[in-house]
Length: 344
Image (cartoon, rainbow, N blue to C red; front, side):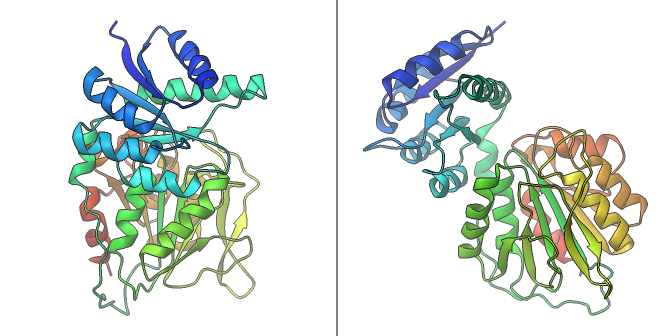
């Protein structure tokens, strides 16, 4: 069996040894080299031709973002980012937008159990990333729509719900940049991501487009033209208050595929509350979260869309929804915003 050639970029000598040794213990992974900063790492990537690059984000002189930009501009490769707790959040999204595959929390040596768990996540990410074609990202548009849309007052649809995981931040950014500033419906986004990153993600998007983008809050009523990102602390769903207004509430349900946040949880509630007036979109991501919720939306007469596989970073979630017959349309990522707006 061919091993996955992996390059590690990490400035701490101790962490380089510990992470390298842990990766080498996996029979599917070969550490072909280590580097102490982004500049050296980019040079080694050109020389060693690894299958996957793992880089720390926080390094002196030439950091992880430097490495991502250099590698993606010269020889695109799947790059996994290691994020130190609370120190590199803004740069994470810059690196993802520059083409990085995904990120995880950097393993911490203080707690052996946490260190072991994070290393397992890293090994799993490496195995998935090894099958990713980084050139997919070169075909994704990244521009802001400055045009207004003429909305049909009798439009059938009253909400857009989006679910995503690995590769989602970049895909979501592409979509929201293309939505018109006079958007007449709320948009609810469920992105698999650690809680501490979601507020920064919402803030980043808010700086890029004129629309109001915020974290959803429990008991908050949904407003037209606002884009909500659900927190990662709970499974959020939509209910109706005594005035008949749609609002966010925390669900007590747990789900097999993913929790906190669960895409299925949100989609199932959209199916019940909005019925034929809901649009559900499943984007790039690992696993099957969202497929059951989309199936319910379709059964209730809503419109369901899956991102086309060849434009996905990981085609797990879209394909699982397609496989169970939950999808009305399969659409390339670049075409999703225009396709959705054509429904209004």
